[in-house]
Amino acid sequence: MSTVFEFLLCQALHAELLTHTSSSEMPILAMAANPPAVQLLFNTKLATQYSRTSLDVKALPCVTRLCRGCRKEDDCTSETLCPDRPNCKGCELCVGRRMRCPTCRRHYCLRWVYETGSGRVSIGRDVREMRVLEAPAELDCLWRAGHGTGRNCVAVSYLGPAYCVRCLLPGRALGLSRSLPAVEPGSHTCGSIINHHQDRGGGGNCQLADVNTTFNVGHMRHLSFRLGDKDGNQVASFELRAGSMNVLVAADEDLHPRDYGGTVHQSSFFHGMTNELEGHEISTGYVVRSIAKAKEVDMATNYCILSQSEVLDLSQEPPNRYGVPTHMGPRLGASRDEFFDTARDLWRTHAKQWAELIQPLFEQAMASHEWSL
Image 1: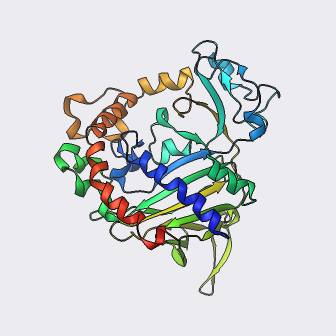
Image 2: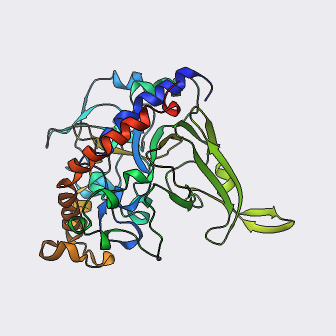
Image 3: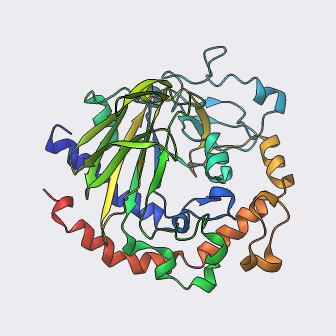
């Protein structure tokens, strides 16, 4: 990151990010075929999405138009998102423009979104709570300053082991024995990590083949690369310190002949953050991406709007893929949406306690020299 000004802009967003993630509205996931549980229980990075909106679009008059939740299904599958341009699936001229549905009367707009499809499959996201916020002025300043042309920014925060929910809250109350992804003995970590992965995975999601730019604040974390997936060789590791900027090049995830140790392999790069932070440390990166997909978002809740068929699928889809978590007992729902509701209700009874326990840790992290100039 090139200036102190930019560091302050990112730092100003951080308290807002942690305030959101420590609330009872933290996302519910079902990673690695585990039963749904609050994201914290999987000890992965915490994420908040922001969508960039043109100031000119914000100034346009409100459009009256049926929202995705009220339109007929045929209109949803062949929908044109832009009110003024035929066959538009989202552009800088319509994303962010206020619309009003005459049926449900909610105000909504289009926003650039990431992980709407793959997120449901790979991390088991509750799609009813897919939250996309409008980018605040701080992030808009970064974009207008010329740092990337990305439309979407995901703020990712990694927490040290001192914030571990399993250590801070009663295990029996949370049913943690079945809520954590214990795929292998000893695989659980108390600090946030993310295993080696690819963002585009061969180009199969909404991210364009462009450069990702990440602005880093807070404590130092390690970004590592390796050739190949689980059995690949680690080829590089970088220290992401406060005020630094790093980029990921889309071509690195494509299969090419690559030389490693004098031997050429047909391979691609995977990246990850597999080293835990220390104690109460917090490290955040603001990942700016070029995105090709926009979805309708309720402006009051910031949740993506589901079509009628999507809502019906959730109410009819059985939760068998997750097994039967013993701690839910007779409260276990008969469908996917009831299963997620049970996990949400369970977390709401403990969220405030966890937030109170981590408050002094958070304040200690913010008082460190990594979070000050």
